[in-house]
Length: 152
Length: 152
Image (cartoon, rainbow over all chains, first blue to last red):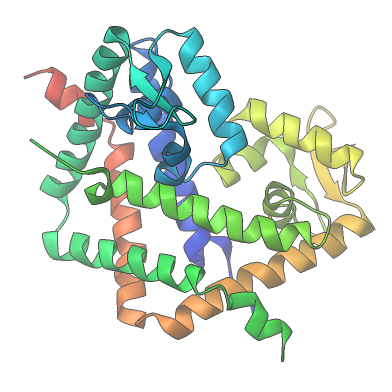
């Protein structure tokens, strides 16, 4: 079977994600942050902070690359770590005042982008988009894509 | 305006891409390659090789991270560089025999994944998916998303 990259679901998702990332990075650079920074900040609760262990799954990031990112963010003084009040073995990540400012800017950019899409795409198409994405995720989670083929 | 991350287009694209990347990485590791390797190999023409300058745009990768990847691939002996026959100033990337083998494996995995999606998703939904992705790309390319807002 022949299949051009442009005809695959993964190529489309990957290249669109890279395009979005470049777009956000340009915006982020104007405010002295990177897109990766903005994404992490958005996932930290403004008031209660967020357990470091739940950030990775929330962002779909491997723990190794996440801890590197968190280390950078600490050096940039946008986050700090503190032991959890109820469970001293756990670490929570909190935003500094600077982090809160940068988070607000990131949030505005995300909203601007998504509102622009909602204003320019058919709402029915967008619903279909969200549903297909969910179905693709479910199919991957079933974890039998390559098993089935290998077993033939 | 409030917007949960799960309700944004970018969150869905990013997290789905990370999930696909993890899935491919597990498959790639079984064959001693990484997903990034597989992706590059798939973009190199089997017979004529591919100009190094056209790989970045084809893959949606920044030139800096691409040259790092190419350097690694050369060390893994899956690619080699050669001056273009017609224009000695240009460099083309070719696959070694090992590279061709790894490329074939990568190709099979991509086809297996996409066939599984096609067999399990409604074809009409998939058509809508490809169309929406194209529309999102076009909206980003228009390059007026943040301009419009800033100008208000």
